[in-house]
Amino acid sequence: MGLIIQKKHDTNLSLVDGLICFYLALPLLIFCSWFKLPFAIAFAAMVLFSFYKTLHAATFCNFEITPKLAVVILLVAGAWTALAGIGHFVFANFDWVVRDAVLRDLIETAWPPKYGGDGAFALILRAPVAYYLPAAVVGTLLGLGLGDIALYLWTVAGFVLFLWAATTLFPSNRHRMIAICVLIWFGGLDLLGFIQVNGVLPALGMNIEGWAKFAQYSSNSTLLFWVPNHALPSWLGIVLVLRHWRKSGLAQVAPLLAATIPLWSPLAAIGLAPFVITGLSWRQDYRRLFSIQTSLPWLGLAMIVARYITLDAQTIPSGWALSTLGVSEFFKTYTRFVILEFGLLVLILRRMGVYDLQLWVAVLVLLALPLYRFGVANDLVMRSSIPALAVVALATVRPLMSVRDHFWRQSLLVLMILGALGSAEQPLRAILRPRWALTGQTLQEVMSQHFGGALPPHYVAKLNQPGLMKLMREPSLVQPTTLTSPVLAP
Image (cartoon, rainbow, N blue to C red):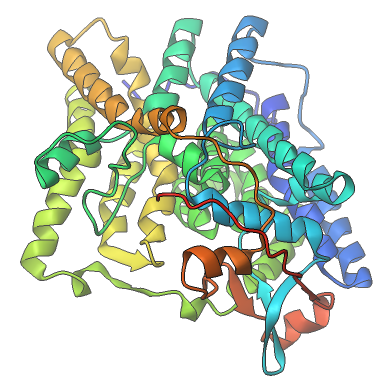
């Protein structure tokens, strides 16, 4: 029994593949406008040419799911995204104070935005901005409020594409409905971890997933509610890989993924890379993968994005996890973390015969990530784990409907329910806490009011690379608003 029942797709890309590629690539096309006019035109031409070469042989006539299931997916994605606080229809988590500020600065400031300077170098917004750019275009034309609504619709579109593509991995509508439920509620045994560490049950709506302190593997609801900018490219990238595992379609889209996803989330790209590398049929498709026409333009664009994303990267704290804890304490915490977050689950899947290369890669990635720290909150572990966790989630769908191994199926169901109870803290939080409105504050104002004033190194950097300075437009200073935002609990 394999991880997923793969339908016999054509070697060509289909409608949902094309829409995912468009969704991932559109922000890169918009990002070209950050550069001086001759370079912007050249880079935009490269994006359009490369996109055409990637999809020119695609077949767009096969929808792959029934209209009824499409309606279910649209309703689920719209409701769950609204409940996540995106668009500010309900309570939004604390991180949205910062994300709103990034969107506001992109809407109200000519690109690239800057926050002062350091000697000869401008201090610019250097962040994975892809998630915000389409909504920022709408907001620039129609105002911040409609830009916020556009961000909600943009997120819904990405979530719809993810659920659509993921359900096509399964053979029947029953499997597909189970897959939708799993992908919404999937999470580790954070509830047990929290109780074990704190000795009490968590309050309703409490954030419990940081119980291990040194690392966190987030549930799917947490990912959508807190970090859709990392979750969406991870989810869309991994379903593309799984749909075209060991098929020529993966070689066709791999250069596009390499160029586009780092602008969404470099950490998502790191987590996705092992699956792309192992999923490619190298002997069969190496010519397609390294074709000058299809790959060289994407490679050039990837290098430009990499120079932007890695500006001042050395200012972001990093190091081996062992250096923060003693050896004994680290391995004690690490073992408990692995067992509760995914270990028990994959052991049951192993017992039920649900193992193949995709799941092996996922397990190895999840075992390795907690060994190294990157980012103030150890973002490497939280964000690079998203593709692997999605593979584990999808691996549970078939066993949940198995007619064999009754004991193990019931055990798997119990683990999934316990994981869902932890995941449910996020929607409960959104329901129980009061809604707050979009503030219109700048990133600098938000950091001054809530974080002591220092601009975060993973959001800003000195434009100190001579090559990039010559290519980019003159940065524009973000103007303050002096608005006061609500005081929110993390």
